[in-house]
Length: 293
Ligand SMILES: NC(=O)c1ccc[n+]([C@@H]2O[C@H](COP(=O)([O-])OP(=O)(O)OC[C@H]3O[C@@H](n4cnc5c(N)ncnc54)[C@H](OP(=O)(O)O)[C@@H]3O)[C@@H](O)[C@H]2O)c1
Image (cartoon, rainbow, N blue to C red; front, side):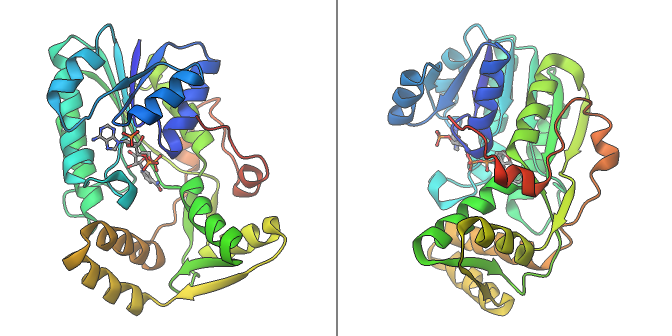
């Protein structure tokens, strides 16, 4: 039995279907009783619990031999923080897993995670990686680049609602996008024990600017226009938001990073570690979206 933390998220809900199709038994940890009920109605196994609360985890892990964690406290919808979830929650999961004799832990981190990264999220991911490396668990770390479906959801929603695709900055910064289907397949591959003791940066074949991604979405939407939010405006908004609504400060800081930092990546060499895992071009992923839980 696998405990999947983050199984209700963008990536986790695709991973749930991949594991279901592979007949790998798993249960999803969620903080929400509504989501747990919906998962059960969909025939999936769910347990209510909060990774921030160690007392919830022993029973959630009952009978488990592996944990896969795709949790995040980054967005405003999470109601929490990267330090509480991406670091604290993951460390709680690792400690609880060790305590009850779980063998394997697969951690979704992020590409570039380091102690000195400008984004708090990446520093918290790095702290979780360190804890895992120092644990007695058989570990795998998967470090996604930018998840395509996260941004197509944001841009797609504003396109549908107002005919506008919002782009951060001038939109000319190349970003490596990886599809949730590739990441979910990589998660399965790791859970099969084929990446034990390895950290793998998982990217996709395309480095696309946000302008190019917006153009693809506008084409798929049958129309719309791009609106660019200038980086100085985003920087100022991020600084202001940090004081009054830190969760939005983090999101706006992430938007600045996406618009200005080097986000490109040549994923091909790392992909040699993932034989059989799909390497999906952006255009193809947009044409046939994944099932999600
Ligand atoms: N999106 C990206 O571009 C990107 C890039 C690199 C790496 N990543 C990493 O890839 C993973 C998947 O990302 P995603 O975008 O799919 O995440 P997401 O959609 O934001 O989902 C977050 C998940 O975390 C769970 N969660 C949050 N706090 C929790 C807590 N205290 N206890 C238990 N579960 C908790 C949520 O479950 P409930 O709300 O049901 O409790 C939800 O399933 C994450 O680890 C993320 O940091 C993402």
